[in-house]
Length: 140
Image (tube, rainbow, N blue to C red; front, side):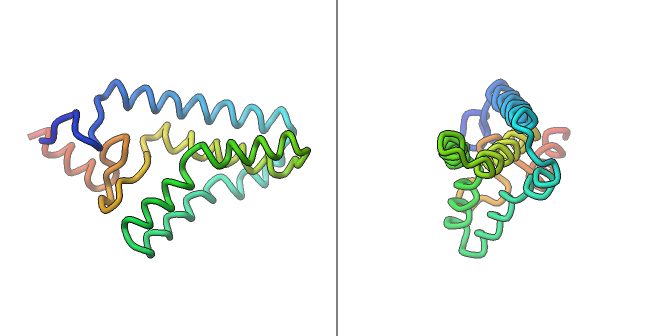
């Protein structure tokens, strides 16, 4: 079994903290969207849009991980949200809040940033088949 201190296998306390942070980001983004009078049909349409970055894996594992990670960090939606807010571009602010909600939702359920070349290994630990296999191995 890998050490809990090797990359991809953070201590449970760190994972818990990052997942709570995801819940907070999700709640804050949805609340702000509601206060700003966002269109809930648009929200439903775009909430999973950042996952389209998964198709970046067709460019190879390293490029795919970079594309996926770029779409799953708070940096770009935070910049877009600020430009939208201060520029008076309401739809841009709405899209940024939906994007932030998506990232928060992913973190809350345990999906993290991908390591290049490792399909089921993220900064929050194993996901998918690898997590199930590890759980079975730990149970033995």
